Image (cartoon, rainbow over all chains, first blue to last red; front, side):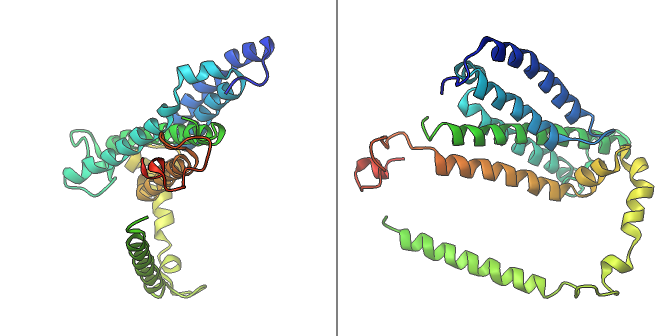
Length: 143
Length: 115
């Protein structure tokens, strides 16, 4: 898919805006403990930054973020989230009960880091999923 | 399409089983507006979250603590729904390698069965 709006201004603005969106998305994901936000919202913003490149810059964005990468990212995120849930299961707790994992830490701190990791994995998963959905819709089925 | 009826049968049995299981589970729910329902009698769970969530999870944002920690299993399923949606989009919308662009590919030719 080539870029529809081939203009220097658009390319420059997109180049300037995309890093800001991505940094802010990362902030939203990692700051979910203290402010509204979290993995879902930040993941959507990361996907939006990729889709913005797809519809404006076009061909180059597929070289930077290949078509296959979306669904792979989503799978990795889901797998890591499930593994994170299984860790306390092996330590004698219940599924996704972070208090049992990292048992040398105090329980509250283990919960804190469990939430943090879960937010990051949700972010990866949503990022990959939404990008994959956009690519599937926009490519017309062509691999 | 050999074996299509078997898949359909398995799907039908699975769906019927799920339907029966859901109806059976729903009969155990309390009636709507029941003043003796567990959710209205035991108000303590909401109060518990508000009072104890910070010392238990060290997370100032109560919503995050409930969403990802206390209700983590729900969030896990929610995230899987997103992945399954993306997978379904890919399965439905993308074309297999051998299937050409000229036709639908469902003519029963060699390309129709190839993955």
